[in-house]
Every structure is written in structure tokens, then in C-alpha cells.
Amino acid sequence: MGKEIIKLDEKDKKIVRELFINSRQSFSKIGKKVGLPKNVVAYRVKKIIDSELITLFCTIFDKERLGYLNCKILLKFHHFNEKLEKKILGFLKKTKKIHWVATLEGNYDFCIIFLARNIEEMYEAYNKILYKFNNFILDKELAIQVKGYHFPYNFLYNRLETQVNFKKREKSPKKPDKTDIRIINLMKQNSRISMLELMEKLELSPQIIRNRIKKMEKDIMIMGYKIRFDYSLIGLNYFYNFLNLTNVDREKEQEIISFIASFPSTIKIVKEIGKWDLEFECVFPSHFELHDFLKQLKNKFPKNIQKIESSLICKIHDINTVKY
Image 1: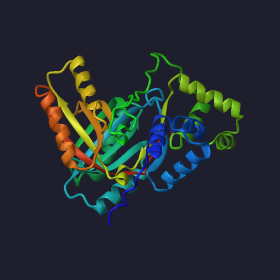
Image 2 (image 1 turned 90 degrees about the vertical axis):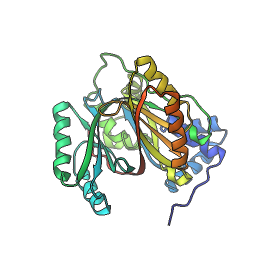
Image 3 (image 1 turned 60 degrees about the vertical axis):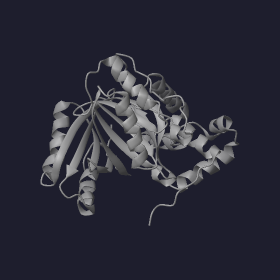
């Protein structure tokens, strides 16, 4: 039996968009932007959470500043099934520094994003996974994510809104101290954690905590607050697309990125070092709309798009073993 499709009205859509832009902002602030009282916003957000449309309120940190590379493994298996999936998930839950895990369908079966302090640590973590499941693996790709562009759920309106592009940090920024790290670990998987809970766990005054959070925001240590959303509950499929480019310079690459970003269906674009030059995430009702979109992309840049592959993101798993 399939999932029941949830209908969001215009006010709900505006609230969701505001939470994507800044999931830590107060309900009163959201209310002023969407034209609703604070208590009505709180009620609507609770309903959205109870429906499991929003599955996570997360804080985005500058991982490089924390001393980490953002690494990704894509895996294709010989005979991928539920038993193997459970075995992989069980292993990853016990593996340190796992940041994001998803089951895919298409060119790849699994995506694992993990953190590593250096190339040697990345190689060690990569091999640990490969050695464990080597007998099942048909194909594998390793990449380092370099830059991401985020977009504020334009698909809800079917029109283009302002891009959410997290700010660049200074060249030689100050590193966080131990207290900052404690705050980061409490906020990474709960951007809406209350001041009271932070006070109880940190044993610090609200003013000290507030000042430290503001300082990390100002220094771009905290890059933003966002949400994780289950697109399938509003009748959309979540696609992962991989691009190989050729005959491009920086200007042409930016032109391709801008073209992909001009579609309301685009959620995120990532530049990386690895087999693929660009990746982007998007949502469509079906593969047919995705096919039309990719056709437009190839027709627009026939001399530059060398190869495109796509996978459906079936499920994002609740696994994050990172502790800074």
C-alpha cells in the first residue's frame, strides 16, 4: 500500500519554505512573514512534523573549518535486496563519522557520505566499507564534495525564488574551541533545540550560549539552519543526477549551473572531485518529467554534457554517527 499524499495549502508551503531558509527562526518571526499568529504557525508546524513531512531540523556547519573533508561513496551491488540493505545499515550504524545514508534505485543502489580528516583517513574509511561488502559490490565511486548550492523549495510554488547560497568564510578563520564543539554536537541534528535544553546540557548561562551561537553565525562557522523533507508524501520523486562535462571553462560551468538552477524542481547542486563533475538533486512527479528536463539540459549544452546518469533516492536513513 502506497503512502497517502498530503496536500499543503499556501500558508503551509510558505511556512515550509521559511523553515528551509532558517529552521531555527522563531514561530513569531515566521508568522510575521506568512501573515499568521505565532500559535497558528506552531500548530501548523506540529501537524507537518506529525505527518512526517519534515523528518529533521539540522544545522549546517563548515566541515572544513572543523577539520574534515566531505566524502561520498556511491555503490552498485550484484543482487541488492532487503537483507543486504539491513546488513549495510547495521554496519554503518556502528561506523564512526557517517554523515548521510540513502538507498537509491537506478545506476547506484547506495550513497554514503562520511567525514575524514585527511586523504589517508578517507582511504581507510573507504576501504573499511569495501572490504566488508566486497563480495556484493558490482561498481563503486569515491568523491570529495567541494561546493554546494542550495535552493529554497521553489517546487512548492513552481516559480523561481532567491537562491540560498551559504556565505563564504574568511581565508584564515578562527577555529572553534571545546565549548563551541559541544554546542555544535548538540545542534547538528536539532537546529530547533531550545535554549533551556542547551543550558541544562552545557551548564552555561543563556547569554554565553547566545553570544557563542551568534559569533559562530557571524564567522560563518554555522552556515545555516535547514530541514529534511519527505517529498514522496506530497507526490514527488527525489532524483540524484550525475554529470560529466567536457570543453568547459569556469564561465561555461557557471552557465550550466545557472541553467540547472533556473528550474523550480532543483533543490541542490554540488561540485566535486571524482568521476562526476557536477551532481544535482531535483524533484518531479515521475521519471517522465525528469527525462524532459535532462533532454532540455543536453539540447542547451550539446558540446559540454558528455554523460548524464540518474538515480531515484528511495529513502534517506536516520543514520548520523558524526561527533566533532
